Length: 260
Length: 356
Image 1 (cartoon, each protein chain N blue to C red):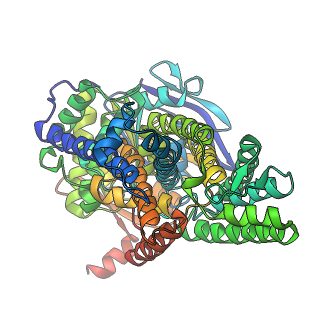
Image 2: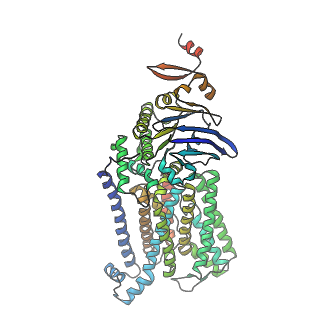
Image 3: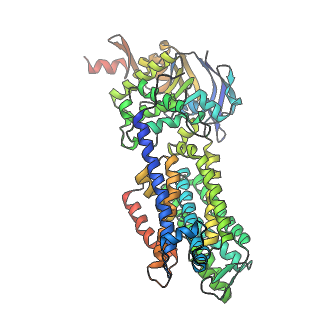
């Protein structure tokens, strides 16, 4: 077990946004946090690395209680890729180098440059090294953001809707990269997602949030039409295409009406 | 998670070396300009002899007295004030995530001017001298600076408060700056109305930003504050880079954004205050300089901060030299010239769309 969360509670202006949140994650797992807009998915991610301060509960990472650590120490353990990344007149290499911030004392060292270089190789981004990030496409920018979180040398990656602004090809590429890195480097990733099909394909485990609580939690078996309808308030059909489970909105009657 | 396969990429090192060349080039330009600035004026001194005098050789007592008492302090004041305003501007632009932030556009300079006027008129720290060259003397430079600083802090506090309540959008902050500027200008006018002739002359003369009025003691105080602030800003360059990447990215990298923002603004206000208190209001340098440097050197604070410091010095020294020569033998206050140059540049920035 690499991460365990106990009885996490978060208040915003005295309103309970999250409560009774408890789960744990193993090394090599990709976890998808699912749920409707505004349910607190992003808030949950931010509570894990203390960008937001939870009211109660505990988060343990590799035996450390995160709430006892300083922000820089947490940043050496947890990489974070926010939903929105700002650009500027900066090369991709410099933008990724920034991810070494938690390890930098006064200035970068040769070791920092080598780590950044190896992450560029890992993500096959060598050609983008000296490209300016304000001239990049959404997919390239997202790769830079992921690379930045990887050079933190984290044990856990938190990704807030890593594919929300990407086209289909880039979505698949980014998720495949995350999947592969998690397995090869023995870390874990937690990401918030909207696309249930992508989640089913690339995540090992699922946390479904409803009204600030965990409604269902587990492997692919928890994704059933009943649970999805309870969480999203919409009937769905779950079927298989080419051996992969797929979620399609609509009730069986609707589906029949379209395919008589 | 360990990455050990990497090497230091050669093309990146070449790219970085280019940035250093720009900075070294800026340093050489600044020095050449310093010598030129000292050599020109009502009495022309050959650059060779300027250099020799600066090295400590005594060519003639006349040169000694012109260089050491008049032109060198004025040139150094221009460099220090330009560098300080420019670095305050670049840091404010970063920590407020706002490309049109600067001591002047946020109303901090005018707040400092009001503070200094308040000190001169109400607390009586200034009086008029009869000599033309040094028409006003600040009796108590420390008190004037402190009062100017307090008002700069007040304006900074209001800006930070507004950005907290309304979100720090460029429009809101610049409009808040306009409001603060007119408020403090009105306050200064109020003080002027009730001031006696001597005080009125002191305040009016004082509000024209002019680097020719500082003496060595004032220059030392100003330089110390600007130097300490520069060290502080450079030490925080990685934090400012992180904030440039977005508040959430910065927090994910362990940067305490709120604290960096607050302390950075206070230090930037201190620099602005020290400069306003000794040389008066000099607009637009803090706004325009960083943007000109961005064009050449990019947005990476590791190079942008030193670049802005050097270019701020170059720009204000060049402006001051031009202001001394343009309608010679009359000497124009440098703030008049920077306003003439800065206003069109500011409008250009607005037209272009203020993407950083």
